[in-house]
Length: 106
Image (cartoon, rainbow, N blue to C red; front, side):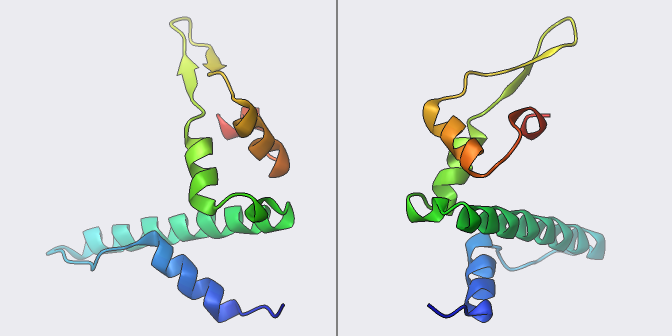
């Protein structure tokens, strides 16, 4: 299998589903471009981690993002934090990506 770097970039830009930028203020457009740029970096890093761990053979990027988004950190009245219950699928995903659950929820 050959590696097509251009195809990867086309896929990532298309996955962000960025609407055409229309605004009357330049600062708003710059902010939107910056946020989309950061989102693209995070998305490409997560995709690279999925490829390294071969997680992309079983799961798609949106399904992994959905599973990770279900992990919540709750602040208790005394100022301490607890992490919500983590399902088996979420735990396997976090382990496959070699992520630290405590840092992920920080």
